[in-house]
Structures are given as structure tokens and as C-alpha cells.
Image (cartoon, rainbow, N blue to C red; front, side):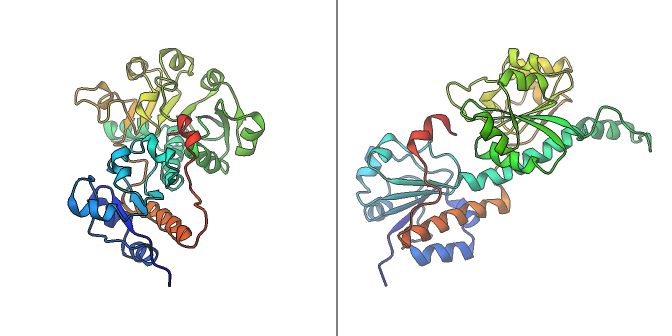
Length: 335
């Protein structure tokens, strides 16, 4: 039987049993030599340094220390990084790519709950659930049997900004619903948008013609405040902005002004900064629905991330290429 490659966890230690419950941990240890009790929250400890010198596969997650030139010098055998989370940009220094180390990410698995959350919010917003729930709680009664005008999801116009992993997953989830879906993405052409189930529009036109706009673009220098005062002014009165991407995509001061005027609604799972200061008006505005960055993998969903990593480790053990390899050439325009 071939010798199993040395592996090492590098993440927040308390997350390890959540991301790798017993069944997954057993599968992982069947293909790599791994001490589950040794979790690197930094790379300075003597025991970590000793194992790092033999490590071929680094299994990372939220809280992973930065992999810079000094760390890589201490890990001469490292050939793969398997990330049990989404973006790898925050902890991979250029030297990782320069050395040709294979990097895999569970971003596709993390896209699943974000797309599900977004679909739920789109459908709830279409029924004006947030405002009507508050009205019911305030009045403790409602006109039973009345048909409420102006709400509903039949033909509701949904604009998706960004054909990212999450954006594409969401487009698939929107297909069974009787919605009119459009997409804005500078890297997608009309034919590809049609295959994804949407009509391609320039961003301004999408904003003008959508009842609900949902953001799925990465945070880059170009996308900071992608939705500012000018863009918000294009959205029709009564429309709703949903943001599960990054808070910095939206100019919060401009959004607060629109919300105070009562012209728009917003569903925000991400904000800038995060969390918001305690005195932020967004906590109290009735047309702002805030959730605490929970659209991504939470609770039992994080084991899905661990499963991706285990499957990638099994592929490496079998001499098969990684299914979820990160392309460094794409990092400039991805999350």
C-alpha cells in the first residue's frame, strides 16, 4: 500500500469538527496522514513547524494564516492546498502561484446556501412579506379574504448582477418560477446568458427594468460602490435591492437616503463595515431587512465544504486532477 501523503490542518480549530464530522474525517484520514488534533492557527509553533516541513497537502479553512514566502520556505514538500471555504485570495501570497502549488476551493459548495437564501428572499420580497409581517404585528388583524394589489411573483422582474458561481446557481434555481429574469455581467455574452436562463442587459437597463435586483459580483477595485446614488436612482419606486455578495458593492449612505425616502427596499446579508456600527440607521429603517452574514454555509451546511475537500484529497491520492482547482489567472475578477 503506498504511503499516505502528510497533511496538516490550517484553520480555526473549533471549526474542524464542524467541517469534518466523524464520517468525513475518517475518509480524509484514509487517504492522508493527518493528526486531527494538530491545527495550525499560525505557523510558528515547534510542533507545527516540524509537521509543516513534511506536509504535502495543506487543508485550509476560515482562519487560515497567510501563506507567504516564509511559510512556503518552511514547507518545501507542499504541493496542494485544499480550501474548505470560498475565496482563497485572502491567504494566498503570490509565491503560492509562482511555485506551482495546486489550490482547490470549496467555493462551488458554498454557493449552494447563498443561492438558496437569495431565492427565498426574492420570493418573499415579491410577496412583500417583510412589510406585511410588520403591519400584521402592529395591527394584530388583517382583512381576511382581500386580494392585496401590487404583490406577487407572477412575472416579477428579477435582475441578477454577476454571473459568478452563486449568480449562476441562482439563475438555475429561478428557472422553475414564473419570473422574468435578466442578467448584467461584462464577461458574459447574450448567447451564454440565454443558456443560463436570462436576457442579457447593460447594468443601467437592468436597474431601470427590475422589480428586484440581486448582487452577485465579486469585490474588486472596479466593483466598489457599483451600486451608488446614480444607480439606485435608476431603480423603480417600490423595487428591492438584495445583497448577499459584499457590502462594499453598495454605497450605504446613498442606500440609506433612498430607504429613508421610502422609495426602495433592501435585503442585506452583508454590509460595509461588517458588522455595522450600533447607531447605523439600517437597523431601524422599516424597509431594510438585515441578516447577520448567514447566507453562506452555516450549521450543518459547513460539512458540505468538508466533503468537497475530502473528495479532492481522494482524487490526489488516486492520481486524478483536482475538480475544483483555482485558476490564478481568474483571481483578478473573482471573489
